[in-house]
Image 1: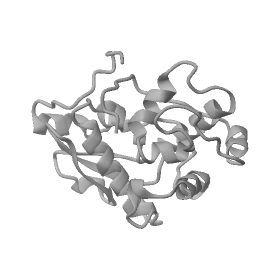
Image 2: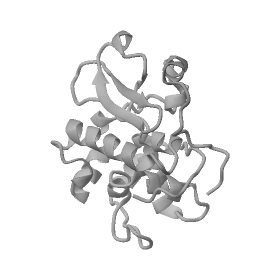
Image 3: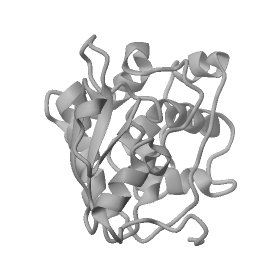
Image 4: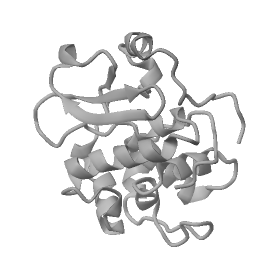
Amino acid sequence: MATGRKTSRVTTTVTSEECRLNKEQWLKLTFGKYRGMSLPSVILHDPGWFYWALAQPGLFVGRMLAQAKFVADRAGHIRPSVSEKKCVAAFSLDPRQGISRIWAAEDESRLPKNAVSLPHLNLGIVQEFNRETQSEVTERLLSFLGEQYFDGEGHHCRQSQCEGFFERDRNFSPKCSERHFLRTSRQWKQASDTLGKIQWLNNPQRSR
């Protein structure tokens, strides 16, 4: 996991027409540490690198850029559970280490005071963490996703599994146009007051 990069949050949206086109054939990267991998596989192995690359002007172009936007859009609206029950993605925060636990919660009112919830799982929250904590947070995010959708395999899933995950509409909440981050959660103030000084926040104004 490359942890030395920092960037402002990336938010993107794509049209349904673009989505249909992009799922026909996933392009493979022709450069960098993930050469030969498709973008669904990249983001489910190293979301920090994916969002960093997406923020670099001109790094993705043409169809690859369209697919990157499609992946980013869906990665921000992942259903917290494959269950039909209504639930939210809940995160227990640690003042130094970032996230200590992630789970699908059915009752928001019973969250601990150091926890926040998001209506969808957003892989983009890795952008909220500094270089010291991003790797551990990524591990917890992908482990949780693996438990819910990949039979516990997480970021060890095959490329075809990653692509299939992003192609299945039922895994996402596409009608939501809002991007949810931890610091925009309704419980953020209570959690931050409970934790005291939080050391893992990434400064969005710092350049890479």
